[in-house]
Image (cartoon, rainbow, N blue to C red; front, side, top):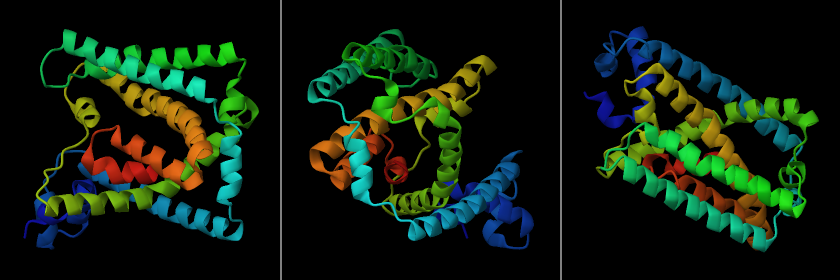
Amino acid sequence: MNASRYCPKNMTFFLCFLAEILPENRFFSEYDQMASGTLLAGLLCLILVCLGVAVSTGVLLYWLKKPVRSSELAERLISRALPVPMMSIISVLLVLFYLLTSWGYQRFYPGDELMPQALIIQVLGFHLPMVIAIGLLFHAAGLQAREVFGCRWKNAPAHFGLSIVYYLACIPPVWFLSAISQYLLQLTGYVSHPQEVIEMMTAPGPWVLRACLFVIAIVAAPVFEEIVFRGIFLPFMVQRIGFWPGLLSVSLVFAGMHFHIPSLAPLFLLF
């Protein structure tokens, strides 16, 4: 029986781990000759999921005891919403820098294959100019980052700790939804591939380039997305169309902009 046919790709690490501890079970036999390091990665994933289940259970119980009303969250977000003229400028700059970066990449690297240098060009031609432009707009309008994003340096350690807790709590539902979505896509005959950024990070190359790609994918890109989507567009959309419609619409745009169908549902939930 071919287990890989019925199991999503993100379950491979778990299947490898099960093949190691259940060698007599032929269902997992095809995973007992995986590449070196796969078992360790599977064990790490299993530990993270178990931690995530424990943390998500604790968070759920806490929310049931002290529920947070959507109206309270909406008020906090609306108080940080930027005015329409500034949002219009930011939207135009986003499109402009994106098109210029895409044009520049195609000019230097013609062809359909996406090179690892694309991430570096994206940071230098899109992320960095946008952050600078947003900072200049805030300065010209007399706005401070703590007013727009609702954060202060003295609260940074507490927010960082909470971010780890919420990240662990998100792992089980995101992983489960990812498994379900990939399974449904396989039923429709869709051939699932990893995101291009994952393929670029795992491709052979100089360690300096791989280190740069890792920092960009793990640090630079997520920070930029936090600033633009959760920090700027979410408060504005909640102010314009309400809490739930605003949250759902921004989540959909956030998931869709990654242009990766298997990740659409997990990214939508993650936002």
